[in-house]
Image (cartoon, rainbow, N blue to C red; front, side, top):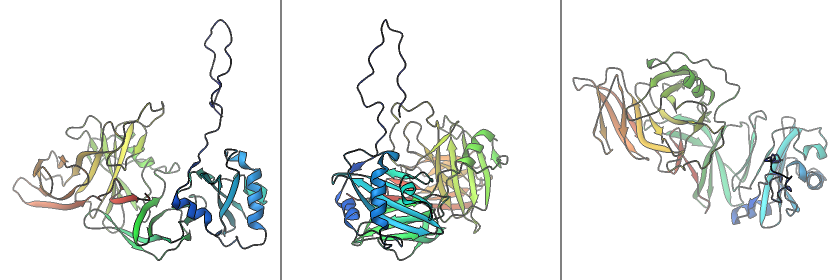
Length: 407
């Protein structure tokens, strides 16, 4: 619970405030037509048909409501799934009152009593509002459960690669309303009646267990403190398995007030995952085209920002810089061209030519941009070419548009 406020040293003790300062942070959200369909659907999972399992879990959850915690008025429980996977029993359920709902999920070894499973004390706990694409699974558990409303289909990407236009290309598997996937890191798309409703990734931004000491920057200025943050916060993009990390460039780009470090993750086929951190201190990932300015952020709020991109080759890479105030993209694209390049020739943007310093420059083009960028040397010879086709979505990560359209 929240800590009581300390006294101010006044002449007499003041009564405790009669506010909700000591109440737990309840996470229920209003139900929608989509999420009601999920509640009304049959219980899913390979363990749901076992006699008594669903009834016993329902009763155990009602008894364990304070462990999550859940508001008293959410007095009904609907189990959504019960599944046994590799010796682990997992469940997802909702507490609701017909108007609002809170999703809860956890897993434990199959031999753990149901009353213990229902408390979520074995780890992997997740709770929050019920979403039309309901996901459960953590990196330690090695699987992901996905549920979507009846009449919709969730499909996972079975292969992901970098396309020639600096976007991600996927091979999608046949899907369904309930999936148990063998990997906690996955791209999913959801269609309902032929309409794309959601395209999302499930992955960690940064791995707290990753201990990679940065190599010196290949070009520009060596900024090891920012490079360490970059590697620690490096995004785990499903389907892109980094073979080797490189610190490509460091410095303060033209028009920037913040130092920037750009890293490459080699993917084994010549393509690269690009990640950039702007600023010092811990870094927050940016995926929004129109981000918000943080209002009264806490003291430990990250002061740096991280953006991502992909490129078909490391010969030239382009990554959009984060905005300096909003938690979103700026209108500036940082281009790391071959060292011998002196200027860029740009097709499709508001600026046709950009002068480079040591092969590095910044071009202005509002997101989402579709550009062909040529790096030219002093004699006008083309040293490298890159096509950049940013997704026409409000949010994108590593060249992949993120969609959530359930309105």
